[in-house]
Length: 251
Length: 251
DNA sequence: CGACACATTGAGAGCTGTCAAGTACCGTGG
DNA sequence: CCACGGTACTTGACAGCTCTCAATGTGTCG
Image (tube, rainbow over all chains, first blue to last red):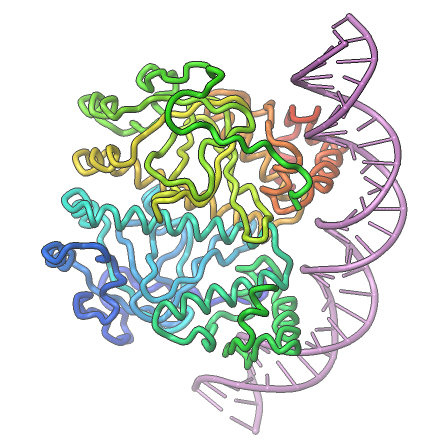
């Protein structure tokens, strides 16, 4: 599984900018349209300047590039500013599995806190940009501002719940149910971000989806085709349009 | 799946002791043999008194009882002091899946931070006791003591990694590999707690194991039998003895 | 327009689930 | 102490879902 493709794992340089200047590489996070997602929810007005004081630069990651890779030393958290990334975990025998899909506003890098080294890799599914949040500065701020502390804790707990939900998907649901659950999840998250609930671009390949859902790319493809025949969705490659949302919900 | 049994979900009373006095119900955590596991790793000597000032009582949970259940309001974290518990998540259609096994020293309750309500249930696999760590007090202490903050963050990150490893098990491994991975995991954790790597009491039923590993209890049972025939393990019901550790590792 | 990655579809095999029967174990009550 | 009932466990037979292998179709980018 997942061994046929050899994704171009060109790790983005750590210090300094990406050579081929990606869009808005070093823009300030404070000028970011999705700033509210990067962290500050729940902060009082006079806490905001403190947050902006966090040297919160942005960084571009081009499609297929890794933001960080398993084994990299950890020192900063990220928040997706635009685009989307997948998180990937590797087994010792080389098999690897997609463990998460991160959309705008989602946090990234928490896996590094445990050991000071990253356990996953994070790879861009499209040209993306992320806010950089130095962990030590964030910790310092959390000690001063209880709202910030709350926010970070909730963020981590959120991830925990998201992952255990995915464990449930992997452990208890049939192929059909898994694909449906995935589509509904992406739909919801897309909607929450102000985009359409009904129509979105998956960005992931069928192989990525399969890896995330614990099945082969062929089964994913077959399932989507069947959904289309049943009038549940309209799928043109990675472009998905949900036609019968309730139908998907009831499997 | 998992519908045949109707586990006695007698939620333990929230205020006050359990009616049938369980062992050491209100003992102080500071007198606990596994105190070092409850939190303080990495704290400097003069931080310890602060930690003990956290009103850290213990509470008993009898086998089959729930420490907390999905939907319960969240206000305290726990750390397993003795015994073991399983965490269980429920799907809307009633199917439920074991999402984790918590042994002595493991944290419990983090799932409640996100929404202030618990998302999982935690049920004792044997008569157990847990340390009670009021979340608000813990937060307060994390703002004062950076070592404590570090510890909490790492704890949460650990859980995240543990869960994504389990996602990998569920998504990429065959039945044999899953069972082997589970046995090795329990063996390791048992060893880390000063017990035998080779011999342990699983406590979980085959059904729980199956639920955790995304397979049926019959397949679990068959797999264990096959392992036994191959001379990898010796299984007498819940009592497992690992004979060929390397054999298990190489599947 | 060709090269390449990605996606679709088919046929068959294999693993795991389902259903069913029988066995072992354990706590309870006589 | 033993008998009993119930839960947990084992094992078998068979079906069905998903994987594997393979061929073909489609889109994209240089």
